[in-house]
Length: 226
Figure (cartoon, helix red, strand yellow):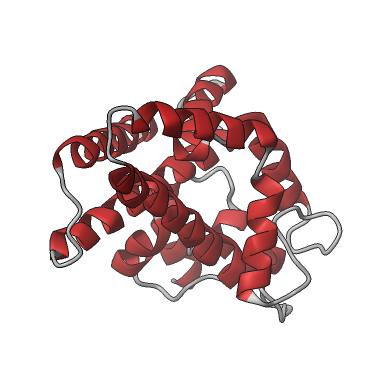
């Protein structure tokens, strides 16, 4: 199931992006423009969730297969360097919400300040070069407005969705004694949790059971409240 879902998310991301870039004009008076942006943003989030599950070894059996899928998903998401994600994410799980040791955490509870710091920590010069080359190559065949609206803006929306639901809301201060791993979860609502971030809003459950793939976190949530 993990492999099937990973392939489905990657394929849908590629197909929808290709279709919109080549065949869908941008019209700010059409509701379809905003639907396409939202769909592509959500699929971009799915790419990172796939890479995240690969880090935990839950996409397929075997480390090598997970690394291949995780590397592909991270690269398609925004040219991210998967080995760096692996190191930082394990630090996050080892030291959640630690001011000094958690690379995802920030001492400020300010949403904007934290998001800027979050993006800065995961941006590399090679990522910028890679994405710049890809942009310029695509711009030879695709209108630049379409590149921004169908590719770049959804990627930023996906990044913000991941940050908001998977980092800021779960780990922001204050921390209380009933927050395992300094992580809180959104209320039980499976439809809302899936739409919010592929069940990643059930974040305390993820930290308690990091070997559970995203598509089974709802079961963990139900067991914890039953």
